Image (cartoon, rainbow, N blue to C red; front, side, top):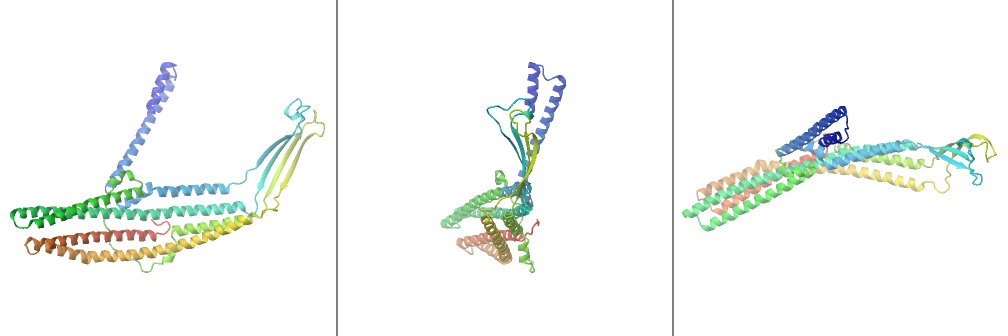
Length: 457
């Protein structure tokens, strides 16, 4: 764009001698400044993109939450809803506009409108200004209802953030689980590959039978296949996390860097009802009850008659064809509606139903919030028990048994089938232990978000 501006200046200078030298210098300076601003903006965008990519290479949960706030589409949609509710509040508080009416009459087509200026034309002119005076507090009720809906939208945004943080944490730990499965299956595949090479050497030396080598080869192929499946699962987890973060383009670069959280002791004196009442989703439902209550009052206030007042100005000429009357006159009128056919029963009944629906939604939201707290706490306690059991008992026992079988096989005390069975058991326990840690991490994240109070980070 800046280069185009400089080129246009040169063309104009050659063809028509414009612009003048002083103007050319100003335009050239502006073009240089514009080029610098564009270059800076491009450099900044490139640096931000590189920073985002480098952060994804070793992504912590804290960095993932920051990216979630910046790029998550559901959060952006919730923020748009808040902006829309603010616009609705402005509309609700707007006062009625007066109406201006200009009317001409008494035009005689046979004699025309006469000579002279506009004041002397042979027709009558009327100016009228009408203004509606709302009664019954309608404007205040509209503002109160719209304000409650605006607050509800703000709470919806906080609840969306809470839900998206929970979903992001679950996807993050799914990715960490997939990474651990890739590591475990890779180690198992490498172990079987090494054992297969050793078995083939022993077969060449005549120490083992060919059938044992075939069994080892089958398990080695199975281990390699499990590694490939784990790699595909990791890619799926990357795509899921990238979608929540709004960074699908860089999904394959995401690497979860945090470790597994350690089991924690939960507070025993937590008041679940108080926590549920303080959640953003419950507060949003309560604000919608307030909005519906104000809308119900607004519907009832329609039975309070509004008044339309009008001021008129009449002018007619004092000469020409119109010989009746002279000069100007003023008038004032009041208009009041007559409720002869519509008493707004339908509007009031609908507002009552909407208010009852909002109350039902509040009761349901509060019940779901409490159930969410109870369920997430039970899931966390159960997952914590499984993690403790694997860490203190199962993993250690499976590792000792596998080491003993490896030692015995090297010395010919057991057969190949016993060794392979011990390896499969160890790998299965390792995968199950990792899955238990992932379940605990996701349950802990769900518990934290389930009990997240309004405004709590």
